[in-house]
Amino acid sequence: MISTPTTILGGMVAGLVLFADLAAARTWAGGVDMQQACNWQAGAGYTAMVAGNNAWSWICFKNEGDWTGINVDAYCKQRYGNTAYADPQGGGPYDWGCYYP
Image (cartoon, rainbow, N blue to C red; front, side, top):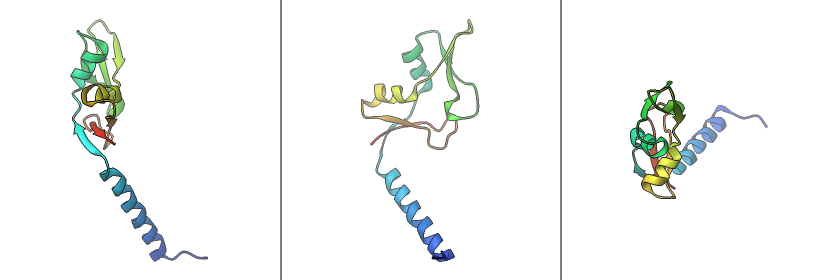
């Protein structure tokens, strides 16, 4: 069977509609405060900072050179409840949000 452009396009549209339905099924819980996440996870004296250009570039940094990563999913659960989860949405450092399933 040979696929026509119409068949291929129809399949792509159906896939996009299914993806949009899945994304729409979630509920916004709230934003992510990276400094608060840093304080909760690393403690006082650490500063949240971006060390790269993607969503996973956030670190907690201390003047003495100590640093640790930030677990954004853990922040969402602590801030908004156990069912909340983190999603970097567009993939940029400032694109994080917390959602409920």
